[in-house]
Length: 92
Image (cartoon, helix red, strand yellow):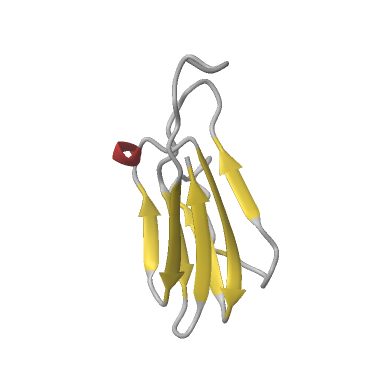
């Protein structure tokens, strides 16, 4: 057994002209993504004080990393690659 008492697997995906929604059943604690070509965005599903989440545009080559603390799983995040666009995703 290594240094850590548990193992973690890595998910990798190339999102092409489509959307990918992070759901709790995926058991993801960290996701990173980067726009490779075209246009894309990400949006959370949570509202705070009656203010709804807004879509955030991605910039080509600029990575975004989102993580959870205290062994909670990510949920309520949708990543979208517009038509003729590619976003690379890696998660654990």
